[in-house]
Amino acid sequence: MNVFRRLMTEPVRARTWRETGYLLLGPLVAAACVVVVLAAFYAAIASITVIGLAALAAVVSSARGIGAIERLRARRILGLTIAMPPARARTRAGLTGWVRDALADRTSWLCLLYAVTSVPFGIAQAYVVSLWWALSLLMAAYPAWYLIPPLRDGHHFDAIQLTSSWRWHPDQWPHPLLVSVIGIAGVLAAPWLVHGFTSLDRWRLRILTLGSHHDDQVRTLQRRRDNAVEQAGAHLRRIERDLHDGAQVRMVALAMELGRAREELEQGADPRQAAIRVAAAHDEAKQALVELRELARGIYPAVLTDTGLTGAIPVLTARCPIPVSADITLDSRPPAAVEATAYFCVGELLANLCKHSAATAGWVRIGRSATRLRVQVGDNGVGGAAPNPTGGLAGLTDRVDSIGGTIAISSPVNGPTLITVELPCG
Image (tube, rainbow, N blue to C red; front, side, top):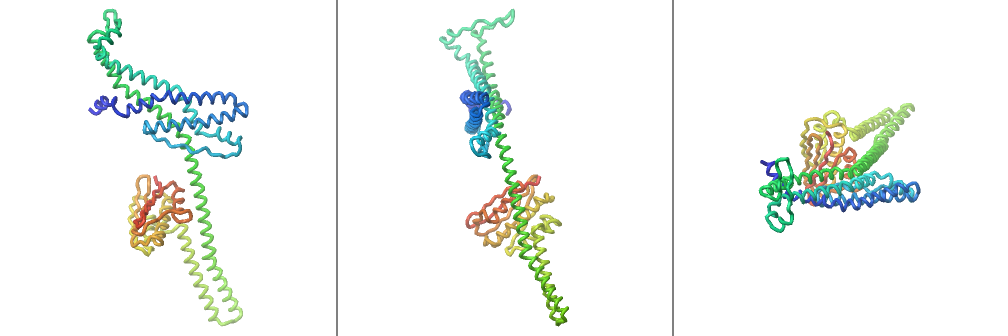
């Protein structure tokens, strides 16, 4: 019943007539494409010269204009949103560099390919669709305008010989009803012809996105690689600074105390004074061990390796001076890189909560779907959290982005604050 209802209503649906209008505009786009294609053809012939190469580069670049027109037409009429490609990168200076960059631009060539195919497709589709609709509607209404004497007398049909024994006269009853039935069938079939043509155009339009999608992927991977390298360098510098300012100072003090104790013992000094120095050295050794443990915990905590997020996150929340609840629902452990990123995100967000939120309570929620790990940290503080280039949230964003995750910050003034991190873990 639903199929029959759709078959009957498809000719009067807004989508059908939007797509029909889209196809009827095809010849106008084809005319613009003819200009670009012919210019590219003649420029390619003349490309044996420097001027010809420059002309070819200019024509190829102008093909992006065809792509922009088609994106606009598809968005306004078909409701199809196609991402704009990134601007062409300039990697070389001067006119020669511009020509080489233009000729190496993948997106421009794809737009030119689309323009080449739009000339026959646009004209043929508009012709077939307009002719189909016109004939089908005229045939469907044939009995009505046949009854009008001026039209009937001015459009007399001769008999059609179908077989040797039967002749069909379209202008004699009840044959006009058969013509009307054929026309109605054509009207009912017309929307599906229109949908088929627009589906073909959608496929061709997606060609335009290939270049931009490829370029976006390359840029994203490059950005993530640069962020990962920068984070690794910053991490190493932090470890070096912590070792230099912490454990190394302790070890130097330990060596000095032990050296003085040895000198005093060798010189026959009071053993009690040497014992005092040994005790001081012992204290320095214990402090150095504490700082080394803290440093190792910052690199990769042992509790995370042993118990995963289920055991490591409660350790983090227990250290907070503000009461923080933890709700962790995981049926299995995520990959190590995702697990470590989630742990350090929670650690950084809890540190920010304690320093800046003025909250009296906080919460951590961690859950996992088939392909994503979701980490949420919230509080009832003053709000106003926002990333800045030198702040912890900016570094956190880079860390999350480096493995393909996302971070969303909701922190209106006067709170509450909710920060959601989603990490891929399919």
